[in-house]
Length: 217
Image 1 (cartoon, rainbow, N blue to C red):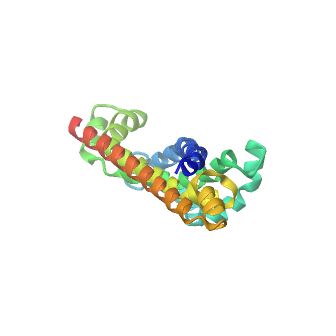
Image 2 (image 1 turned 45 degrees about the vertical axis):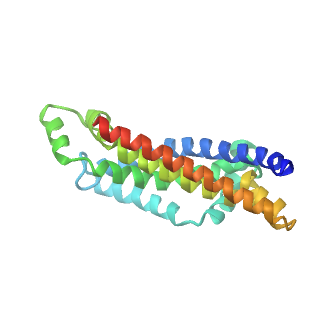
Image 3 (image 1 turned 60 degrees about the vertical axis):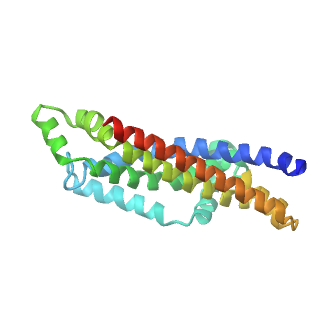
């Protein structure tokens, strides 16, 4: 039992590091794209059909790539950014790129759920597009945005496990190298249990935050 606990410490910390960093960077990349897709839609506050179609197609193409293939394709970019294509830090690059288009669509959907009446009222009061985005769309969509970020984090936990299987470290690496390749079923089971616990904690936290935001509206 002590051996398992010792084996779990470093991979769990690596997984948490990958999840936190890739969530942050995917939000930095995906949030502006989601806002852009929402406001430039035909029914948005600043319709730009050609721009919306172009951005939408890029997002759809990136979303269609299986993560394992995307990670291999991004190896050269990881090497440029972090100096290596193998390891926990290097895995953050493909994780962020894989999650960014998913984040963009989630943000777009959440913002489109905002009551058009709120937008019309803000427009009637002379609000600019920037003010509508910052003071109406985003605040009103916060519960949905939290739910979307929660889903993104849960997906990244699964992606991080796949990244570990091809040299990314973390719990996926532990399950494959110490569990599967060395025929240690106990290591595989414990690794899966830790991943499930992480997913459950993220889901519970996201649900509670979302409920509190709904109550405060």
